[in-house]
Image (cartoon, rainbow, N blue to C red; front, side):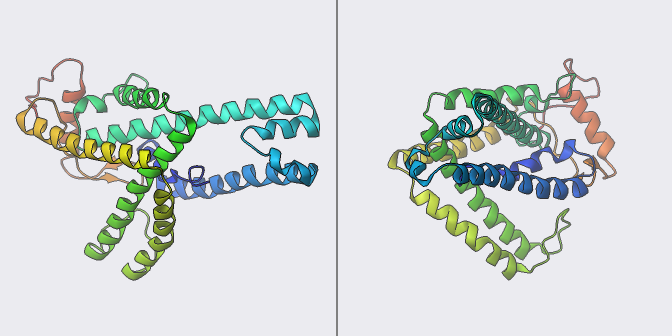
Length: 283
């Protein structure tokens, strides 16, 4: 259940590709919540109401297609299986898109090499997508249960860091411009984080020893990779984009006076041919 209801925050990585995200995102989130609740509740009520209570022990993975067979016949079974396949494809596309655009944003901020900010003629971040797909291929060698447990643990670590940053920024910079403001003070913000922190901590404590070891190894590798990238930036081993001005969250456009200069530098670094405007590697 925890895995089914997480990763809602990933939608924020696509804000730069959305018209007026301040207005669009809240509507999309509320609509998605309704769709998710309905997608779980309606089939569950229909299945449990149509079948006798003696079949409770049969409710295992993949049993919904059998429920469709018993209620509506073969056509409903095939329909449910096809819908499940399309849903999995949609989940894969959503995950790959959010991961690749997250890498794109990091590259545009100068945190990782500029190659991850390159886009195809269709506007898609090609190298970021390849990197995300490589991670999916690596995970494919694990069982589904192992993947869920592993992702839940790492996602929990990430969310704990997000909650800590949320409370710290509220206390340190309460007047910082925010596209979405939660109308509570620092104490209220901290109180809001208590229930999810308790839930996340509980889920993480239920993980197996193998998950603890693998997750710790991944976290250590991530820290080492961060310092490795910073070292490469200082030594000029790779091209990095200069940090640009903050984007206008209402439309994803820049508003600082030097936005055009920064964009010219980015264009020169991302072009297939070296730019002739004298832009050097950022160290």
